[in-house]
Picture 1 (cartoon, rainbow, N blue to C red):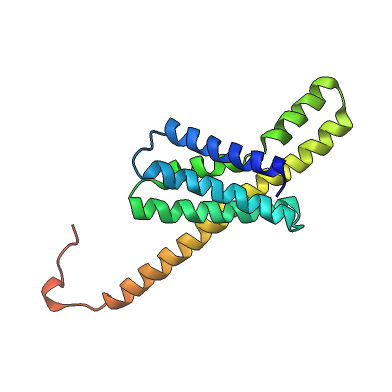
Picture 2 (picture 1 turned 135 degrees about the horizontal axis):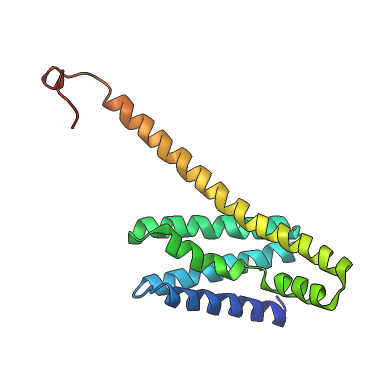
Length: 165
């Protein structure tokens, strides 16, 4: 990794830490959330260095960060959204958003459109990674529910005819 990559990783980690403070995370929540942001940012950098297309690099990092947030929320019994927002902040394509707006202000419409498309692709990669984790989570929950229903589907005579209030 180059010096610039280390700066990006440090910035993503500090950004995650800052948003964790903003969301009032404390105690052991703060370091594990910050580590999640660093992990997602590091994975994004490494996937990019490995030659992965930007969309798939950020999708992979988003998938891991979202999965990490989901597991963390279950372990620490905190709403997933709090962890998810803080961890994902390290992946937000701020440079692309800035450059898009800068080209628009300068009237460089071809460059603006080109940068807007690539930035939108990165944003969609983040959303897709998050949605894949959500789909897997819901599928697992559905399988657990089906399994529980199969074990409790029999009628027992003492509850027959009683209302389920």
